Image (tube, rainbow, N blue to C red; front, side):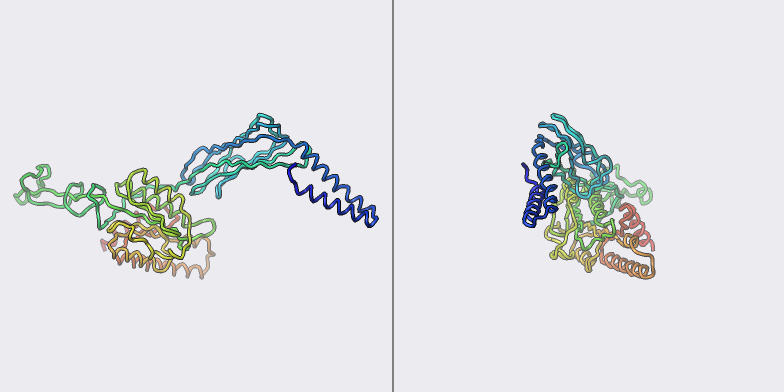
Length: 428
């Protein structure tokens, strides 16, 4: 017999009432003990009638890896190789944070000997690495009070990677470039497609590069020169400090920042650069710069596993491990820059020889959506706008390229708006 606390409790209470009734010579109390003894006897009989099935569970997800927002179809099959089960309840384990869209992750009903049941449902997992572990089953006999519980270790993994959005061309000017051909203009003459200038013709020059307009004007042969394009190192820094991100209601700036970091890494990889990834928060999660689809998959996997972290050692950006970052490389920081002194740290990086692009995730409109529309909120919003403008102007004045980004909008719109804003300021 499987130990059941109900049997022990009912038997003890029945014995206590029987003893009190006998000592006190109270027939009423003696009668009260009878239902308890009957209940305990029913439990014994139920466990005697309980048959032992040989259950086995197998879970098959429709996909091991999906993009966040996509759905996963799960098929759970439970087979019985033992005695027939009059009534069976099966409960499947859902991933944390996943939304059940269709079907049911449970079953209730009989299961014959040699039979099987199939539980099918559809869920939408959030970004991250999810695992479904246990399956629980409860077995009851016919007209019985007994219950037997089974647990199956049925481990499956589903990875929901961040969505990679297409981005417009991003102009970067790193101070150090590699000798290999790439997308970055090197500001020196050589093989390329962008016009750089003209020079006088010398023996051995390709006649196809003769500038005939300059020859007609000056009666001297000139050769067109083009700007070299080289590969560079781009380091994408994703700020995973919990204190720097906003969590308002069911919305958070962390998930949009993860999507932005994945999109930027994919963008620079596809351009032909070497890209590295640094997750800055609880510890230093560092991936060396490299290129190729396999390397992009490593970075996407690291961003998939990223979670908000708290650490006194990485309270602000001043602890960035510069010894790991290649000298003169292009640094792309994705952050809300909510901590005091973060804009100054980025300006210091530029002063130390790095080219810095800051994707500044602005949280103002997200905060406004969860606040009452009154005068106090309006004044706080004006103060927040002034703070953002001062931080942006400080960074841009010290050489940092800033892309202000409303996290409710696509990152491509922010990059395009930043490009137009810089062009308008150059004209003025």
